[in-house]
Length: 231
Image (cartoon, rainbow, N blue to C red; front, side):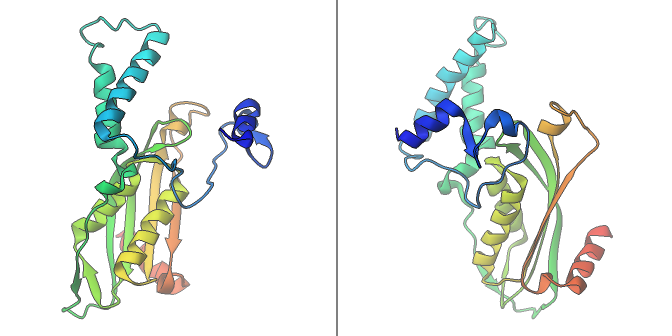
């Protein structure tokens, strides 16, 4: 472990000299890439599930829960399976959706919009749900993508500990790479349970983030896109 890492663990410094307690519930976004260890995939999924099960059992025990109870004794394994196979499956590049492009034979050269893509993610600060809808749009550069693949790309990046700003940009960058165009837009409207169920406990607010690339980064195209979304 490096000296800097030890310092962080001891003093809690995370950003600009502020400790995690100083920062509190403030929203941090430290980079486009999801923070991952270099050896993140040294363990197999089954090995990870086994270790998570043991660790979660310890958490339940520390909280005073009776792990011999019929309702609770299977919980550690259920949580471990859920973490690896479901809600955090987007951490594993092996689960990245395979995408095929097709020639734009219809010569459709206007924006294509898929709206109201429901997703469930988890806040990386408290590991509680982020629930929302994503709207994605692109203008073909000569290739088109199957509509269901747009949903799968959103789900892949949502299924990891996230920050909404990062999620928005990751989806946009992936679409730009796949579609070979800058003409991509992503809008995310979501509720954060770290805001509504704890902390400030505001159940009425929502967070909106946007990415406008290429032709979408003009007032005219933004208005046109908003018209589609509001219909």
